[in-house]
Length: 258
Ligand SMILES: [Zn+2]
Ligand SMILES: [Zn+2]
Ligand SMILES: [Zn+2]
Image 1 (cartoon, rainbow, N blue to C red):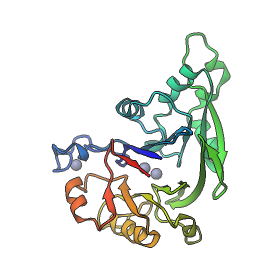
Image 2: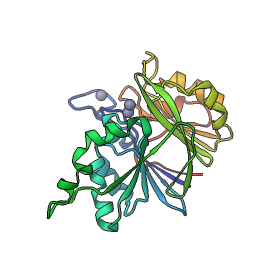
Image 3: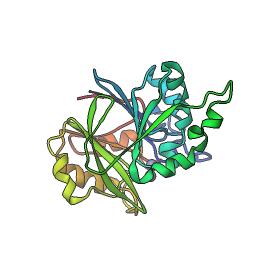
């Protein structure tokens, strides 16, 4: 399994517009972070996780020519609002692209992109509206997506829930304040764990900070843990130096095999 980190920043991205801080003005390209996206490739298929606003640029950077399915963790703008960029895949394959969303948010996703599922706008001559096959999944009910067996895990995210998942020996939990105690046994024996973490200190009501993410990483004991969804309060090189063994900061374009 090949994992490509397409975007590893929060909703503001880095650099933050108008910010002159040390990280936003850094010459280290690993401090440039787009909104959250992840690509998972196996011999069976190619799965995109989330459709962030920079999706087109991220897919160009990754050299992605084909997608078999998309998985949406939750409908916050930074994880969803690049959905229109999926149009090229259905246009090229002449097939609807399956997009898996949490059942509780299916209506919200449809409403946000009403034109995509409006037959009248889609059938206009010359229009290239994405042809998306919206499918739903439920917490802790395995679902086969792009040849992968995924186990979605709903995690608290402020007034929302964000659906992380396990796929083989890899797991992703992003935009979560934690993982429910009774789901943690599903995340044992991992080769790779990807965890969202905002910054050091100052607990956030809807996200893990670095300290909380490290606690969770230690409890789950994955061989390698990658932190993603990072803010400009963290410098990549500093963070890399300070993290314990087996824990690494991700960056846009990082490729990990497992
Ligand atoms: Zn987010
Ligand atoms: Zn900044
Ligand atoms: Zn969110």
